[in-house]
Image (cartoon, rainbow, N blue to C red):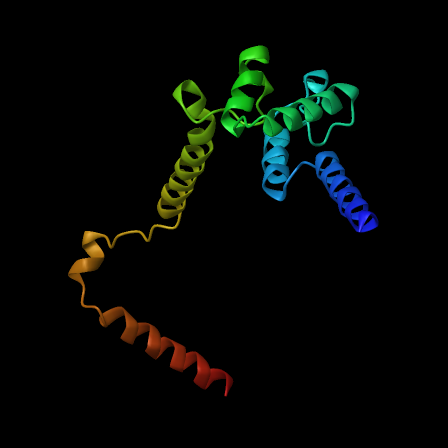
Length: 160
């Protein structure tokens, strides 16, 4: 009986210890991955490498800090705001979609639309069919065709 109780307590401690070592649930791991991909490693500003991609000791330290903050119950927004307050908006892998930074999101689409419009206008003017002149409009539509058709038949008769 004592043996069974000792086994249960031991098993409980082993399970509790493994949960403490691996205290990141799948949801927290996903959130941690999102945060790591949203931040640029401060040691890698020149290369603009995200914390997730960087193998530097600074990145490892930030990963550990993120894990600890998530374990304390902080949200993704709070953690990212902490790093933005500390390093500025330059630490973000993509600019926030507000204010002047909105230009970084809108400008490429406007450029593509304007370029497409310019190409369309240029091609429509380039391929435009010339209008019929007034002197040609006064003649009968079939008069010249009959003349050329008769001439072509004459040429065929010469060679056949």
